[in-house]
Length: 406
Image (tube, rainbow, N blue to C red; front, side):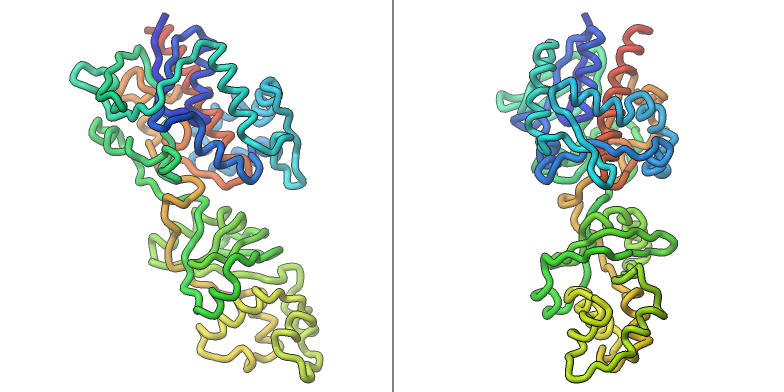
């Protein structure tokens, strides 16, 4: 029987372990943390979004430039297969109004517990508090443990160590230097599905921190997304922001800032808004007038005030036509990205040129990689977990095929 080491006990690593055990390998999963699936459990705090039900061609397009490299893995383990897998663990799923798929329990912990029981029954061993530090002089895997340094000679290895977001949960990007020392090209890890910083005025920050922007349209260049965002003390975050995070991040990194255009009433054009604002204001404050005549929320009015301050003109001096244009074209300067350790996921990782079609590193025979270690990113909505599960399964199949050939 062959011995396979899986390093990383997140979704990609656990799925690789399951496929390997089913294929007859003796599997040990190593992880630096005291228990498995810590980031997976964090993802389930607000309801575990496993995958999405949109047509597969549209689904695959969410992976952007990485789509050609992920297509075969996702097609081999598509959303329907993930739902069936969850159901076989006793966790039935349902489809939300947006097409997102969730367990009926809306939690990650029951699914993870059932999964770990299945892995245990399949003979998978776990070694926690084992931090991988590379290879020793004999080519054995080396781990730092509470009892000192441990070396293990594996017939094959799957690396599934995650990116660099939420490092306190185990994904700290410490593997980058280890692989770089072996000549593996790794694209710089960057925050993805992250918030962005904005230089709010003190008045706006203190009044609107934690307030949602609902039903807005956000635009950067040729990219527009409709949805919700959240005002934070240091900037903006939320689903619509995450969906544009790649474009926003690259603009910020390239130019030092990015101009995000916000439409507060995207279903009304400028002419319709102007007509509403031509009415007599009377003794109403401008804020009450905007709220009643154009149904602009208080936080939206606050954003209009921020834009007026930046332009050097008081909002009260704007004509009805100018107010109408501003409502659906508020320019907001994003000054930076939120720290990577607070991002939902990371972009960057092992470049696909370093991998063969079975996710084996070309320069390190018998070493495979999966999950967020690879150079891809996707928006929230189930795409992150789907690719992690799918590449983990693909790496597991790749190991079995390689061992058979060897």
